[in-house]
Length: 248
Image 1 (spheres, helix red, strand yellow):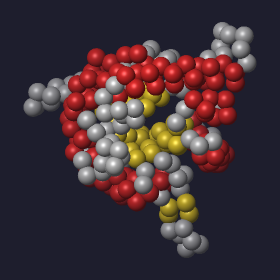
Image 2 (cartoon, one colour):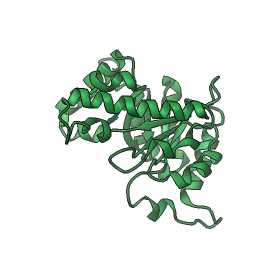
Image 3 (spheres, one colour):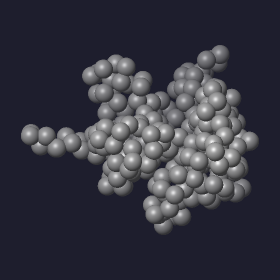
Image 4 (cartoon, one colour):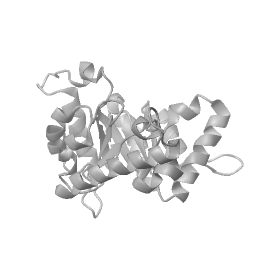
């Protein structure tokens, strides 16, 4: 998939669960996939939605972007360029993950509005101040990212905002003007790149479209070989996203 579709992409998003379910061999495959992606000039996003009490969050940070000291010398983690985090445990649980990312020069994407069908049940719930949980999380992303803004004007603290909820995108973008938005749900989950214009308000790097099954399964129902179908699907998505980004 990296060889077939990578030329149309800027990153590969590795879903950690798909590797971890295979135990030790899966971790080896994860490291190999990350290495191959880097060799192809792609950024590596580790999608594990990590979040835990601070001591465990620190261990997750070491695993994803850092290294762990041992009596036999330090052991490197995955070395991802960015990873996804679950902010629902609060600021103290995020701090070790953000510190690990800072030390590694990596980025994080915090869940703000996810692409699953049941997301609205909690993320759309109204809080005591009248805002929704997603709005509160967006405010936290903007606050934590305010002192992590690079020369490009974008922060190293980004947000996961579903492509399946385009009606919320303009408002959430306004709450997070400096965040890179990771936009899952295009294709198999029903999201359309054409509905995501607001993500690119800060410029072409403001939105990162995540498409997995739309590329990997593009050959199904087609007479095209899997690699060719994946390449064509990725290029079609890239072309649409690039046009949208440059229009904004």
